[in-house]
Amino acid sequence: MYYVMDWHIEIGKYELQLLGGCEIHKSVDLLASTCIITLPAFAYNQAFEVESKIKRGDVVKVSLGYDGSLNKEFSGYLLNISTDGGSLTLTCEDELFQLRKDVADKQFVNTTIKQIADYLLAETNSKLGLEVTLTIDYDKFIISKATAYDVLKKIKEETKGNIFIKNETLHIHPPYTEEFGTVKYSFQQNIEKDDLKYIRAEDKKIEIIVSTTGKDGKRKEIRYGTSGGEKIEIDGAGMSEKGMQNRAEIEYNLRKMDGYEGSITTWLIPSIIPGDTAILNDEDYEYKDGRYYVTAVTTTFGESGANRKIQLGKKLA
Image (spheres, rainbow, N blue to C red):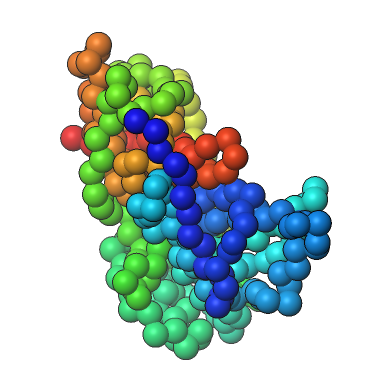
């Protein structure tokens, strides 16, 4: 069966009539999803001027598909416009763009992530709701010359929490706990190619080290796992001892399990997002069948075709 690629993109009050290509990247390991839209710099031998029509902060909606059957792939805001190699590049960011606002400097003592998030929403006059289940606490947390976005990015990098906006609510959760839909894949039917390696948990030796330096100048560290193999070091600056322990256990559990490591490449159908569960079936090696938490999806659409590169994370029970 032959499919014809189709698309619909709105930026501000305009609909794009020409498209060079676009790439949408979504990941539970990054704070915000991004969409890079490429436009021809010249159309019909005339300069294709967009700066006078669209601007930073304009709403962006991207739908992709085949034969008029489109799926909403991205919604967010225009971050910037640049010229690169004879084409125009529009960089867009998801709903977290709303939190790129300055917040007043503040030092928190014996605080929780929820208390910090409450402060960020209040400082930015945000109408977003808040849902927090991540329980890593801080003995000290300092905000200095930062936007709310910057602070959430710092929390993301330090805790590996899953932070996103959905249904007008800011969500902050432990990694891999937010499971959305399920999508089925077969190595013999709808996987174009793969870059996977099957590894057994018993072959993995992993030690997690979370460390920080106290006010007295002494180094404190928490070690979790098995020595003699891969060593993962994490900066636990400001975290309480319990918070450091939780962080070490989270990292260890993400890495210690039988299953595939790597990615699969598929077409636009079926649709999938990070947080979904990918159910893999291999008719040749049934023991490799499994359910995997999807950590990242990169969707590309352009002259070379339409594909999704799907990064697999933790194997789910």
